[in-house]
Length: 245
Ligand code: ADP
Ligand code: MG
Image 1 (cartoon, protein in one colour):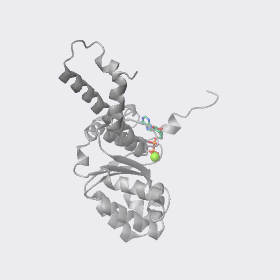
Image 2 (image 1 turned 30 degrees about the vertical axis):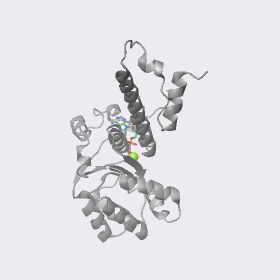
Image 3 (image 1 turned 90 degrees about the vertical axis):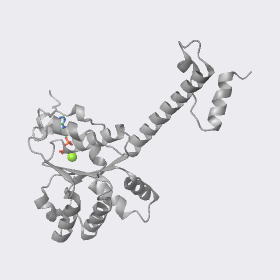
Image 4 (image 1 turned 30 degrees about the horizontal axis):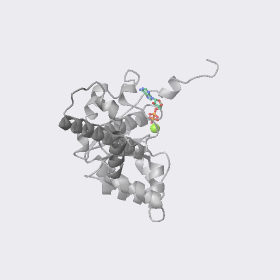
């Protein structure tokens, strides 16, 4: 004997709605009118759909770790203030395709803050993507031959925010510098970029290998950009954990 709740599940599945525990939504609710029952059921469907989309968006964002802005110790890193980050955390700058550059030496929290902002964007419902420059180069170079790379780039092109981490770690070839320019240029005015770099802008020509392309990249990048110069001691080195305690 099929129960009413099983029939509802089966009907829901046939129109691609989620399976819902009816006892869960009607528990403690006596005297629910038919209209109210439908409303409660649809509200639950909507909530589950949003949660599923949020999870999927987070998965697609390619974040290396879940670091949030709340976990950041602004007492330790004093070149950026909590107020500054809270202001950025409303994410309204994504609407104007503003960029942010975090510049400074290793271990001072550039990746943490960049990942924290991506996480915040995801929480607010924006599509966002996190990559290192190295991984981005790989995607761009294999776009023609790899469906996976094409898929990732297609997702990035529709995203509101892309973080490109670790710019300047490795020197780029002339072709790579050109690919990087084309990418930044394609994103400018439409997609916000967060760039982290251990090199100041005056040193970018060293790893990009060419003064003209460097000027062209920086020109696109800095036009609408918050530049956050960071300094200080490495958090990793200061909070180093020893095996011997
Ligand atoms: P960077 O990208 O500048 O090299 P990271 O963001 O990777 O530095 O930081 C290195 C590690 O230290 C990460 O695990 C990060 O979460 C942590 N960290 C750095 N700065 C802070 C901070 N001010 N408060 C809390 N954690 C921090
Ligand atoms: Mg980093």
